[in-house]
Image 1 (tube, helix red, strand yellow):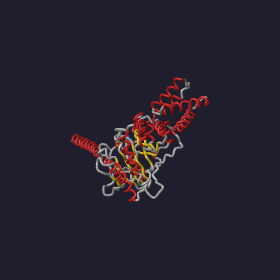
Image 2 (cartoon, protein in one colour):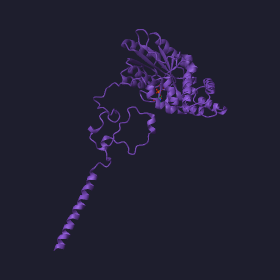
Image 3 (cartoon, protein in one colour):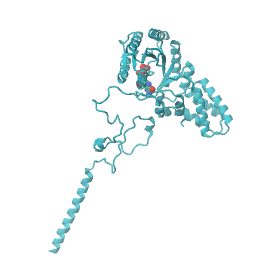
Image 4 (cartoon, helix red, strand yellow):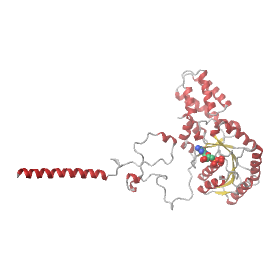
Length: 406
Ligand code: GDP
C-alpha cells in the first residue's frame, strides 16, 4: 500500500514538473520571435543619408519596423525626425515643401564629394609623402592631376610650385604636406572669385537668371534645385520653361516649381523659346517676384542654330532689362567633352557662372580648375546628387578639404 501511495506521489510530481516545462516553454514561444532580450533599439535612419554610411559595419539584425518588433507605437523614440519611416498623415502634410537651408550644404554633402574625389587628394598626399621624391614620383603626381582633369597648364603650374616648396621645406611631416597641398590647391581654384549667383537686378524688377547647357547635363534639374535654393533663402521665384525641344522638360520644371510654390510659365511643345522666356519675365514683373529662372534648350546641332536660339532668347528677355546671370551647366563626368561644350556656349552667350553637376559620380574634380581657366568665370554651384537639395554653393575651402581630408 505504502508502495502504491509512493508511486502515485512520484507520478504526480513528475506530471507537475512536465507541465511546468511546457508552460515555461509556451511562455517563451509567446514572445515575439524576433524580440531581442533587451529593449530593441529602433534606429531612425539619419535624416540626411551620407554616402559614407554605406560602408558601415553591417548590423547583426536587419533593422525592423515598429510593427515587426511588436512594440506599441508610443514606444517609438519621440524625437525620431524620420520622414521616410513615419510619413506625416496626408491631411497634415504641407503642400509646399520647405527646402533645406543653403548655408553649409557643401559641408553636409562632403562625404559624397570626398568619396568621389578620393583618388585625387589621397593619391597626391601619398605620392608627396614618399621619402625620395624622384623624377618618377613627380611624373606620377603630374599624371594624377591630369587624370583628374585639372588640365595641362594648371597641372604644370601646380607641380612646379609643389617642387619648389617641398625643396625649401626639406624634411616633411604629414601635417606640413597636407597644409602645403591645401594651400596650393586653393590657389589653383582661386579664393577671390565672387561666387554668389547674382539674382538681384538692382532695380525694381526681378533678377533674371538664364540657365544654359547641353541637354542631359542636368540643366532642368539644376534650374529646379536652384529655385529651391532661392526659396530656402526667402526669395519668390517664377520659372520659365523655355526648353521646348525636350518633350518632358516643361513638365519636369513645373513639378519642381510646384513643390516649392513657384509658378512655371510654359508654352506648347516645340513652341518659341524666346516668347516663353519673355512671358516668364513679364509674369515675374506682374507678380512682383524676386527672381525669374529661365531653363533653355541645349541642342548642339549646329553652332549657328544654338547661337540663333539662345541669342534670340537673350535679346527678347533683355527687352525687359538686362540678364543678371547666365549659368552654364556642365556635367563633371564628361571631362574634356565638357570643356568643348563650354567653349561653344561661351562663344554664343556671355557666361557669368558655371554649375558643375554630377560631381558625386566622378573622381575628376579637377574639371573645376580646368573650366574656370577655360572660361575665366567661376564655378558657382555644384551638383552632388539627384536629391532635391543636392545642389550646393561652391566653396573652395570645403571642396579642397574634401579632396585631401583633414
Ligand atoms: P537636362 O536635359 O540638361 O535638362 O537634364 P536633366 O535635368 O533632365 O538631368 C539629367 C539627369 O541627370 C537626371 O537623371 C538628373 O537626375 C541627373 N542629375 C542632375 N544633376 C545631378 C547631380 O548633381 N548628380 C547626379 N548624380 N545626377 C544628377
